[in-house]
Length: 502
Ligand code: FAD
Ligand code: DLZ
Image (cartoon, rainbow, N blue to C red; front, side, top):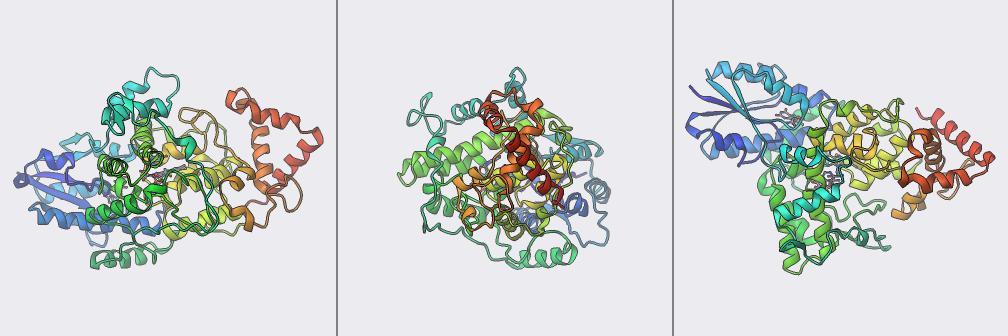
């Protein structure tokens, strides 16, 4: 009797543990397009198309390699719309004696998998740090400092190491990576992948079934196969990695990508492995085609942040996404779904999200996340929005970044202080303020940048909870230096803005 191997949409790796565990001759692979996964949050149409197209291409590759694949499409009349029913149906259809599958990257789906009959759940070993290794590191610690974790990963992988010491003598070159983009600087646009027949069919399906979801579909150009993903990697290493560090935190009106890699969707679907991506970057450093600050910065995002947030997600437990340390209960403002806003930094970030199912890190953290936190938006709603709109959003990576890093809703498990900023930060890191109707220098008055009053109002509102945080002393000192009248004007300005925020 055959063994059923369900493979989920973010498990598209030919070296997947379940494919190694069962001989081809005994295996029936099951892949399922299910409504529940596409709608439990209203995913961006490009994200749904990316997953379905990559899944269909992966199934075709497996068949070419001689695997038997049972692929249930979304429009299959028998499709029940959920993983558990589809697995049960397939187990009966194939008279499977057992089910072998890799653990999902989300508590919700893991719980469903555990309910499948006669199932063996295998660890997902496509990460450099196992869940157990992270837990052993995290458990005795009071604070989970990413930099400490990162150094362990550097030593463990040997990336950019000279024996036991970091190449170049420093572990971290972040201080060199905050440059402003010179006026007129040209970035090389990333490779775009024109839809083939499989993708075109998926795009038509998604257009029909999910046309009420937020986001544009026509601009779809994501890598959907491993072959594509390797081309995208090569393109990044050649054209954008050399300048990756310099402008890592920059924002430029009209530039969606800058020197970012756009590799997160391919990494998170399993089309690329984190180690091969880092090794390609390291090779560019050794070949002299990319400087150390760029290569170290890039590798740190992957073996540092990416592994760290994954470990933290599982370490923190299944209730992590309902944490709300700052007691924030405002519904998500309509501008997140494209309602007009005069704040140029926000309209740029939301529009990039709508067009591309993507926004770069600083837009996610310091524009959208900052605005949500300053306005006291419910972190659970913020989390659901991020999970829905980004092509790379899977809960294990999205939730710690949103709940922990951007909303401080976990009370400091991840970030040592809230990433709160007023207009001065946005002005320093990019050029949006130059074409914004608001005056970034003003705190109050009809043309004052709303981020300024919101920032001070946020600090004032949370004084009891946050003022003892050493990293915020300077900010609270600044607040206390304002006269009582000025404090009152600032808070009134913020209150008016919040009252009008539909
Ligand atoms: P690059 O800037 O080129 O970075 C290279 C790679 O490093 C990325 O592809 C990614 O794999 C990894 N990386 C960088 N930063 C992080 C990070 N903080 N956490 C984990 N990996 C990181 N990343 C996701 O993959 N999925 C998400 O759903 C997601 N949600 C986020 C939400 C918020 C509020 C914030 C602040 C960050 C989020 N990130 C998420 C992290 C980061 O913004 C994206 O990984 C990055 O923007 C992807 O674009 P890129 O591939 O061009 O990244
Ligand atoms: C994101 C996504 C979507 C939109 N659709 C599917 C699907 O139809 N079938 C599938 O196997 N996976 C899909 N995924 C990815 C899953 O949501 C992801 O595998 C789980 O959340 C576990 O991380």
